[in-house]
Length: 176
Image (cartoon, rainbow, N blue to C red; front, side, top):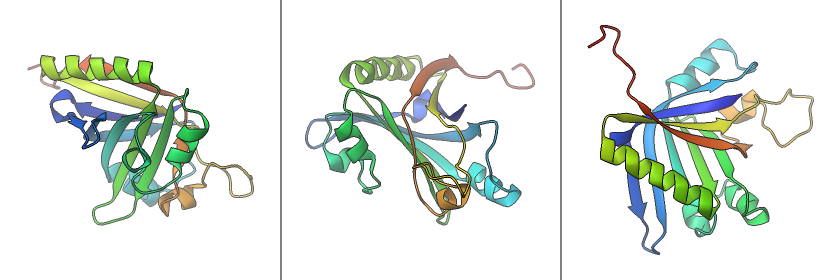
C-alpha cells in the first residue's frame, strides 16, 4: 500500500542550495492507495483535493534543508542515515496542501537524480513518486502512526520505503 504523487517531468525543479546541496521538488496530483484509509467522506475529499508536492534530499543535507518545519524527519534521518525516510503531511490551510518530503542515502539519491535528469531531458514524461503508506492507526492503538484525525490536524505520517518512476504521459481519452 502506498501514497502516490504524480508530476509532469517539466514541473520538476532541481536545486543547488547555498551550501551546495542538490535537491529536487515538484507539485503534482496525489492519492493514497491503501486498503483502509479510516477517513470519512469530506475529510478524504479535502485531502485528495489539496495541492500536492514532493521534495527530495540526501541524508547528509543539513536539518534546515531536510526538515525546515521541524516535524521530526531530521531526527529519523540522524538515527538511521543508511535508510530511506519519508514524511507525509497535510496542511489544512487555504488552500489545503499535501506534501511528501523524501530523504535518501547517497547511492539511492544519485540514482533518482539521474532518473529525474533523464525525465527533464525527455520532456513529455511523468514522474511517479511512491511512499509506503499502511493507513492510519485506530484511536485505541499506541503507535507512532497518526490517527486520521491527527493527520488532518497536521501530525505527520512517517514512511521508509519509496520509489521513483519515469513513465510516458498517459494517452488522452480521445487517443490524440
